[in-house]
Length: 279
Image (cartoon, rainbow, N blue to C red):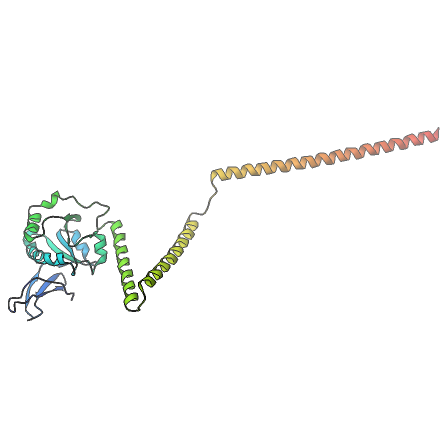
């Protein structure tokens, strides 16, 4: 079971207990004397079941175990969770260290961050952080005056789904970096150089793949202007060829006429010579 934190005090031994997650509930149990308390209605949300908040009315806290402000809020948040049945809502909590994808999906930039969710419409709570303020916010429907998150940045949108995957990848890369540095003794600059090389190589391969796919789907076609120029050039070449052929033909015709004229002259001279001999 995942261990969380607590500010609750055990009555038998007067020691501070620890929260243990048990499916959807958080069970208060003392780690000193082993006394178990009553089950809390606080719902632990993860990347596997976060879509449960898309139906009904919810108040959800995003926290981190190392966050001092989150620790200060935890007592009031647990107290507020006990009112969930009376208010006909569900109260949840998300550990961003264990669910980095959800921190990206909900654009969590500070801790703790609290959201009110009503039938898939998300609103960020920015009021006072105490149990009475939480109860009043829901009971008096003060959330109606809070502007909903836009469709583009809504946690269930396609865009934020992509963002959540990037957050997961970034956390995975960070874990790899820490392992290279801590376990294998690689210096920080060496890890950064390795990541830079892999990034460049991956980008080059991805770019080449994209170009090949685009060429395969959309083969290159000549533009209309290129076609016109090609046709025009082809016509000019044909005209030039015709002119050359005509010139050659004219030269051949001229040569034939010259030869014929020369033959006629020779023939005439021959006849004149014969006539003189006869005389």
